[in-house]
Length: 274
Image (cartoon, rainbow, N blue to C red):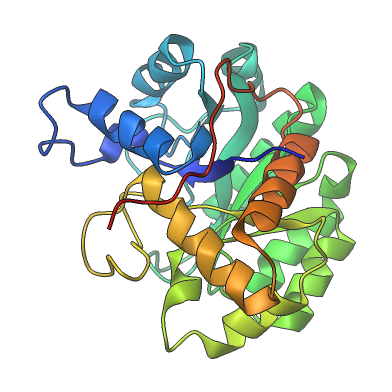
């Protein structure tokens, strides 16, 4: 079983990298030092997509996705054919992030649901899994996934914050459940219970960096390196060693994202300097 971590959802193009003289490379090096062997850089619009794809093409330990976030109104709103064309690159391993968000958007959100359905159709045609964003839209999100037979391609419920019943319904549709730094917050007791109950073969971890930094960095900029804190927190909740939990979640990542690259060099979870 792999002995390194994977950050299954980050936004490398959005990181604050001023702390490093070599910019983004500094954040990538930090991640490797924390035992992170791979990162999935997730697209939220098509305008930034070329830069994301370039990162993945240049870095052997970064894969990417293509999609338009449900809240994005400016810029291109791609059809199925355009998504398929952009996904036709070996570095693109998923479609998304896509889904629904009724928290940030108001009014008639039919356009969100139509965009969501197009992303699902593209994922099914190219055989690459979906990365799902869901905020205050759970019933519609699960309904559309079922109606469009998204289980034929599967995917991940990114940054999961719902209860156990919703987790089970998502897993019944063939989806993995990914936990972000939110699970480390003292107030997230219900979410921690979900993490404890998760089947070991359906759980993923992520940072969603630069957002949602885990304890002990809560309220600050988040980085892929900090997925280690997410892993440590959940492993402790589940009574597992960090090495075993890291190995399992990394295996799960590659079971879902079958086209993702694997590290060309050894990466291990070494003790962190105090």
